[in-house]
Image 1 (tube, rainbow, N blue to C red):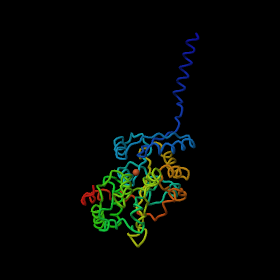
Image 2 (image 1 turned 180 degrees about the horizontal axis):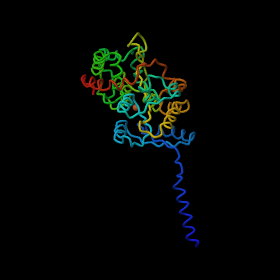
Image 3 (image 1 turned 60 degrees about the horizontal axis):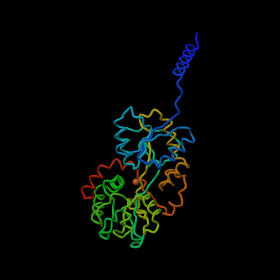
Image 4 (image 1 turned 135 degrees about the vertical axis):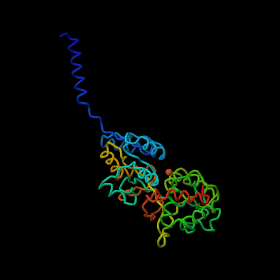
Length: 341
Ligand code: FE
């Protein structure tokens, strides 16, 4: 046998061997994320460092990600869906896109009212949608409840973000669950009647209007306040925690919402995907989430950082946040009826 032929045969044998025993691919997860890259990449990098599991991600808004998961069906390459607002997570559950998980770790790290029904998703962080007021014009003692902002005293003094934003839809939906539709409609109609200006396209614009005195008080998510105060600490703004006193609905606590994550129903790496979620609720991951976006950790064992502590403590509404999804359509119709755009 000449050298060339022998070498060719050898190559063939090696090739066959290689095909017969394919090298095992390194474990890898794919996350569809409505959270921005700058927020998730540092977390996933840390997870990869510690476990050797690579985490890839596709970022988009929640709506398109849900549509994509539905369209891809059984063939979807996504292992996890990460998004914000219980309304979106509820929607994903209703569409049958998420797999229920059994995990002692998650059950101990994530309070029950901040998980999907059947544990189809788990909150990772908490944000409060609370009041922000102009400290030159108001004292905290002038404020009390979400409902009170509907009263005649507040005529021309309130600023709100658009009713199109799911954060407001979820707030109104949980009010419907607690107060009923009739009372909620009166409250939201009162808010609209008290607006100083047309609703804004984002929470930061609400705070800027409050800061320059175009209105006295607004409703915003806590992390937007944290971001703005970091950039412009001189602004005459402070947070107020409503519905802290009183019995029943009046003292139900501040409306909270979540960011969260679930494993897709069609994932072929469910155990690994669950491991990532469990890791995201550990102290170290929760710390990174809290420090990078000034959201509250979902794991009650994690200590709140100094910045969040400086905003004071509050009682939060203990309602199951999935109610925000269940009553979302009702809330949207209600807001439309009273002219909240
Ligand atoms: Fe946001």
